[in-house]
Length: 237
Image (tube, rainbow, N blue to C red; front, side, top):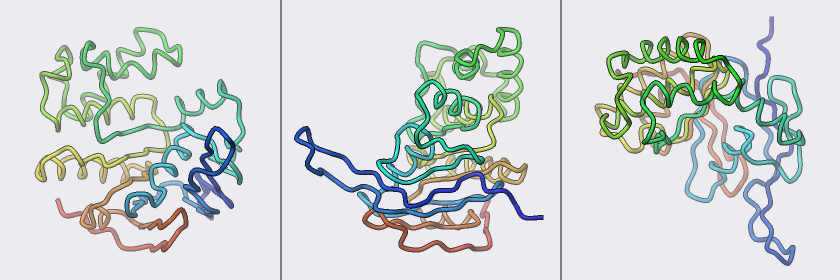
């Protein structure tokens, strides 16, 4: 039985315009990309290649100027903002390089935030946040605030927040970029485990060793796909 595509992009363009409607930049210039459910894909490329723009569109944080984007079969390229917000909350988990935690909230409150916006009742929010924090081995830090944690612990909180809504798709933007190498390996091992459980992961990275852990490397150059290579993943601990 063929695997279902969770991401299908066709002839995707993203053009940024100046106020006078002249073209400022063509960030994406006609990309085609198919990612199957359960794949682990790394996106690479030099600065200005279109990586961030592509990830923003995949995460429904930006819209293409032209072309189509099917997320799990639904055309999200031209959805209204309210529908798009619902898609983001229920189908996509975000992991950022800078963690993006709210410093005034406790760890468990940070993890509950996506569920709050989905209207999940308080008791259920609390239970689900506890469960995912236990999953990332932070059940002893529930009442701490982000500033009281190490960088690696903060990134594990961010991963718990990404997981709390049980999304099928995880988008990770340089998730180890602000971490030392040993802590980074711990985070990558956790992502390996999540992938082994069936999650689809799309990660932006500049690091070749990190990319080797994935099943597939998509390289961008000047807004186009330069290469798209499937490989045997080689986790290194």
